[in-house]
Length: 356
Image (tube, rainbow, N blue to C red; front, side):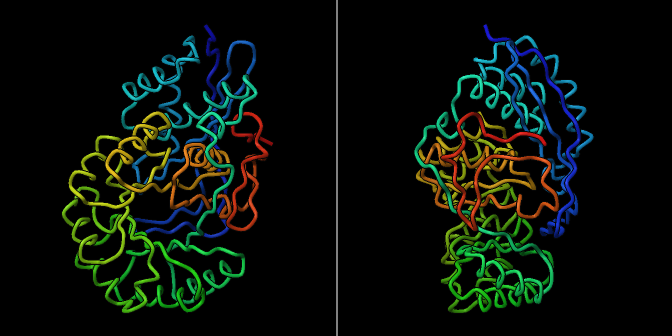
């Protein structure tokens, strides 16, 4: 028995240098939650919840309230049985994946720190580094051009462009500006479920011959519109990724069976770590490619996701860039970032992140 003795949670508010705009809305401050889990003997682990109301409907206040309720579920349990605990958390708080993710992260961090084991080793140790894209949020044509030019200067070869917040003509104009400013970059288009299949195909048609620069179209249509996803995949002549449509392993299996996607975006924050492992298994069984992403997260959850993806291996698309949007850094440690490269080999125990 290795008992969990304490669960603590507190607000983690971090202003952003640039408001994080997607089709559904904009976030100017990351209103996250920092979680601490303590084990018998004193081992301490940190986790992060990053609720994004316009995506998941979760808020910081709701997350704090959920974590307060989950304390009774968690304290006194044997930490070594973390998969069983994750199942109990899912049963107790099925609509609060950010809170569950934070607890699972903190629990695994504490276990790995106690064992002197890095989290990327715990997940399998397949790779020790990843290469991330850089997100260009919604905004003006000039802002997209300037951001793309700076990203190219900083060495980013894949740019993820948020679209769907305005007209099709505006989206095409922004994409043209990005392609001009970063002539060697490949693009991931991310509509965050905001478009119809017709509009998504119109965006691709608007790019003309330059649609070959599009490496992936992420969630072009509504979460429940698998027919629309399939149509974009079949008629758009670009690979399609499912994000909002892929919230659990069962949904991934359906996406594979319906041939509605080529790639699954695995986000720990939308399902928790245990379910994310099942999602990877379901995606691989269905022959689907893998992407790792996140909400608006600090280096704590971004490093956890990097350890997850690198440890398991086989992730073709990496979108772990939101720490670059943080105006301050209340946390230290985690992956070492140089341009687009995320190096994990220096992490020796847990995710390696601590609170300043």
